[in-house]
Image (cartoon, rainbow, N blue to C red; front, side, top):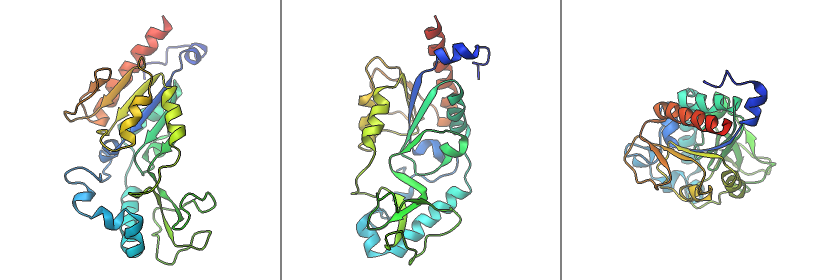
Length: 250
């Protein structure tokens, strides 16, 4: 990046809190299937059968097989340029990533502060007590979750994901991060899914806001729209951050 010329003490003074809301578009460029695009997973599968507690109760093996396929897909995916640049940005700024994605590509790219609001494919939990911390554990992607595998409470293991109709946990912490952001970036999401679509309104009015999306979508006037894919738009965003850092220096 273009910060290397700054003395370390000056870099510390110029650090800003950057909060990023990322969605499926950033991981699509790594080959991860999206859910809601025209050719996404919900055009091929009935979400009521594979992404609801009721669907799991009716046919747990079908649901486990569906997510085992997603887990194998993730096993072979790699972080792309956008993931890597957001991770590199941590060298100069405090970066918090709030992601709607259930993959671990941000972490694999090197980002250290990632909040998953829809869960994580790399973890499993109890089918009876989804949010019990004693039942949530990491689970190797290459090992399928099978019928009969048990959680710590004796119930059937399931993916640690938020299905339709389930409660989103940790949203208070998410909103607090956004409220204290110096810069807010939205990347890879069309902001059509609630409650994530409402998160932008927690950022202060005078905070610089950026929205990276390759499609023509309505954007509030106080947001800079960068019409580009995630991997192309991230470089434009980095330039904007450098400009804002230079203004702060003055």
